[in-house]
Image 1 (cartoon, rainbow, N blue to C red):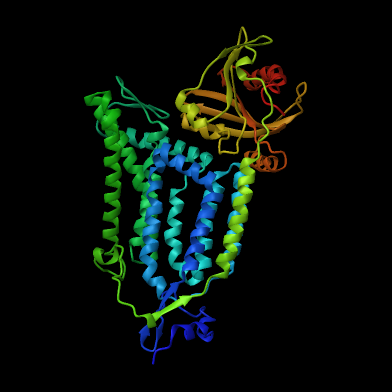
Image 2 (tube, rainbow, N blue to C red):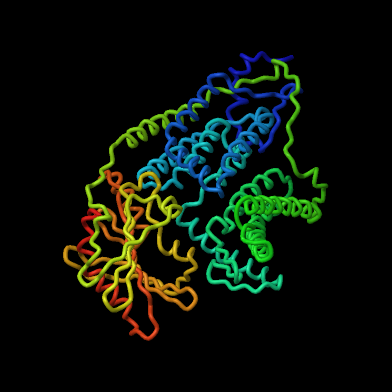
Length: 551
């Protein structure tokens, strides 16, 4: 005898404890499979939560879409949300057969995520905002389907991690190392083809032609999308966990080696067919072709792994996405899930945070008055300056407000390069790029790095700075750099981020600057001659800086 739906909903013994259910249980009552459904109010509440989340995270999502658009290595970001939605839709039949209980721990996860959002907005650390968004999605999953259901939804949601750009400081560090590695391996391939070649940093000299392995050719364009594709393949690859891990990790050497092969191949083609092989359509097509080879190698690897271990099934049996055919369901098989109270609480918390974010965004940031670097003196005592400019591509990457770049020299002696990058606001993700990241990208090797104290000069109190010795081939240079943030001079980049958050919250200011000074280290000079040269220049330059970098 079947039990009416209303009576079933009024019974509590069968719905109070779901902790004993396995990950993928099937509810059977009186010989019938039970299918659980959400009432309309639950779906409306979920949609409301998602809309409020988008509202709260609008600035961070806008930044995310912007980077997907302008940075080639993140173009695949548009594709991954569709993959997540497809995987969640495919899970619907499994979830409908599970009696689960929403958990109040969802409120803890949502609270943590929203704190990350506030900190990320105030400190301009978009990485926190982006990861916080994924954490909110996981919190909503816990509020809807509890731990049991979220074990199924975790992987599809986690795939979105590969849509989040790497933070600038880490991206620049990885790019610099990949540039050098790809250049070295590419040159070895060219030499294997019996072609004379000379490499200096990222510059490949073929005699008549010279190739520069720029940041776009570092291999990150392959590596990051391939990591995301490897994660998708691992999800669809129904085998032992260790095989899935191998698939994801193997994308790293595959991308690096194939990118090096591409550089070597371009060098070979340029040598025999001209420089047009390294630009235009052919260059882009070669990149696409090499990426498709990476994908083919990944599939070949998965096929080979099916023959390893105890579970040796055919590749077609262990790889793919299965959609269950819709079966006829009687009204007596349907049970309605009660409206989730944790979801109601999470929705309220997200709504409050969204209102807070709007008030923060509408708060007019204090941007102090300052002189422009175009007015900076070209003569400082005996030092005579020769201004220089940054290229359009570099300016787009740095996204700074104003800058000074000039070579200063005395009538006799080596020059000092003076660079100051000023940002009137760091709230939208724009911030100074560390020289320890940028210099290796130009082929310079960091030989020594220490932290020193600079004595007080005029109005400027003593402060710490980073002293770096760099080398490229036979050339060596000495670099001083530090950060000037709203009257505080700091060498530690982590302290810079902390004070950025603090000052954005308490002072409503996020302006700041990077100051960098470089001079050559000349053979035959006294050991401390380069230090003395920089000290002599800064003694005259630092008192002038406060007009252009306000404290």
